[in-house]
Each structure stands twice: as structure tokens, then as C-alpha cells.
Image (cartoon, rainbow, N blue to C red; front, side):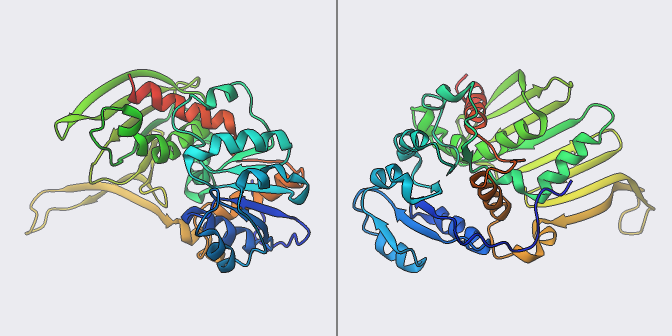
Length: 336
């Protein structure tokens, strides 16, 4: 089912605001401009030294030296993008939730569940969390692969991430909680609620750095999750249904295999060879030729946020409960 339109739409009357002027903010702005929506207000940290240049670069007229005042000024905006540093998000988000207007907040919202646990039983339909990998065409292909399966699925996900040897585990595994949470969110999106069956800790580089985890869901699909920190590997998702194998490695590229291809012995290699038979290979930019200049996943994420503002149905967006579930599963895995 095609849930998004490909035609450029303009929503000139919508008023968007943004808090945060870091690297990720510019991708949000570019995506919304592609939809014909301009940012009217911006703020960053208190008395930010870079805000003026940021506003000039993106042609934003209204600058706020205090992000908390912009958060409370909800009569001036219809929706707000919160893309500030992770540590500053909770206080701002608590204010924004009270405004009862649509908010797009950057993942992971917070490190660990200390803040997010109050949302574990509440989705809050006005808050969209920026897990943009959900919108990748490759991931939508994976979702279809699972939904069309008549039996059980064997899944393998690899999440390599750089870590340090800090004694504080939240600091040590920060990049896992912050960035690898993308992969954990994808597992929840693809399979729903997951149950941990087994965890193996592995020492690499002389300190505790890797995990091998077996997860299952209600349909008895099985996922092998490997968090191989500091490994020369790519993020990947692999699905098998007993007939076909879908490999997404990295998350921006997919390869679909069915059966084996036979090669007869040769002088150079005097043995018969069997290799997976590739039937489809595609990268994310071949799916979205019109939007190669937009960071992958951001166009459809922005489009859904506009639909949220317009009170239309939302299909893929992650919410605060999803953000909690991602952090909770990572805590159970990395802190055990």
C-alpha cells in the first residue's frame, strides 16, 4: 500500500518552529522546504553564539535566544521540531507536551529509561519521534517480506558501534543507546514486542564490549541480534523464510536471494562452486530518485509530520512509547 505521495506539496500557511541548530537540524529544514514548508522560528541553547548564522543560512526570520520561551509560545507555531542535544530534550519536551501541539523530537529522546519510563504505557499521539530508518524503502521491503511470509522468519541484525572503557555503563555504551537504538526500533517496528531468550556477553579488546542475543516474538519469529562494538562491520538486517533471503547491508542497500547458482570446476578453481542466486539488488537512492538530495527517510518523515499537524492518519511514525521500548531493550541487553 502506497502511503505517501510523490508529488511535491506546498503548505504555505503552516508555521513551523525548530529548537536546535546542530548538524541534524539542517536536514530537517531541507526536507520541509522540499515540501514547501518554511521554518518561521528558531532557537538553540540559551544565548547561542551560532544561532544567528544558522538563521541567516536557512532564511529564518524569527530568532529566540531562549528556547524555553519559544517552546511556550505555541500560539506562534503549528508544529515544532525539537532537535537539540539529547541531554536538553527532556526539560524542553515536558514544556512542549503541555502545549498540546504536534512535536517532532529527535531520537533517542533520552539515554536510558529514567525519563522515558513515564511514557511506557502512553503513546501521546501528538509526539512523533525521529526514528527515520522506519521510512527507508529497504525497510518497507523487509516489512512486506515478513508480512507475506507463511511461516516463521529467521532474522539476524548486526549493530557495530564504537564504545569506550568508561566505568559508567551509560557513558561507555552511549553510542549504542543513542545511535544503535535505530536498529532496535526497527526490530520493534518489524516484529512487535520482543522477548529476550538468551544473552551472551563477549569480551573484545580486553573489555566487555559485545553481546549476542536471541529474541523471539508472539509469532515465534526468531531474531539473532549481534552488538559487536568497535568491529569493522556494517549495520545489517537479514531475513530468511526458508526459500528467500533478504539482506539489507547497510540499511541503505538491499539484496534478495533465492536458490543457489552452480558453477562448474575451472582450471583456476577445480571444485564445483555454489553461491546464493541474486534476484534483486537495489539501493535506497534507486527507490527515491526524486529526493536524492534529501537525507534518507527524512522526506516521508516530514510528510507524516505535516499530516500529524493536519490531523490526518499517521502510518509509520514512532512515538514516545516506542522510544521507551528501544531504550528498555538496550538496558536489558547492555546493563545485564
